[in-house]
Length: 215
Image 1 (cartoon, rainbow, N blue to C red):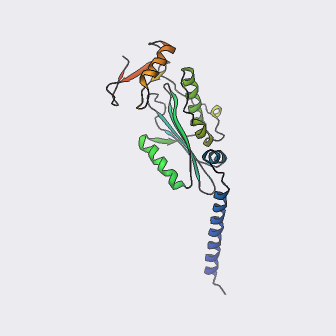
Image 2: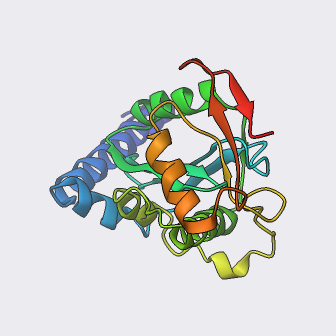
Image 3: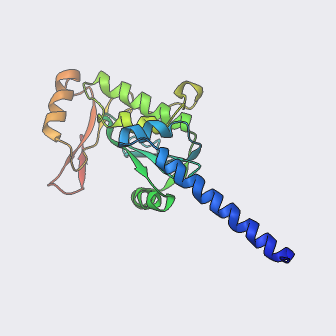
């Protein structure tokens, strides 16, 4: 006759085996293809939503990272680089991870660039919506990959967020060049649209990160 402690151990092993089998079945049932996997993740529980701590400073790029985690431990992530000053969603992607450990490498990379804070997904969705609309008025379009990243936001509702979103600077668009921006083309488009005094800007000095204000 098995001792009580042995019975408990046996039940524990059975539970572990059942959970392992459940996870294997969940993985096997996942659709194939990155976009299909991202679409499937829209109904998963929210794992976290992170936002640049100083996101209201329109001279800085805003990072947004949203992640959802499946019962089987997979993680889907949507990442955005947003310019509230002028250009809108400059870069975005949706990515699927088999484990949370793999996802944490992305999270670590994001946090190495800026201080991040937890945020309401509705706020994240509103920042993205307002940035895209503002940039569109100026003739700039979001990174097409933002649609994949938006899937991870699921049912986040920008209309449910009362937080005002700062755009531009002092009532005008504010262009702060990034390392990959085509400065001359962007400046020319803004000048045609708004005239030279219709927007604020900084310009690179000699290709370094140092910049000079328009004044």
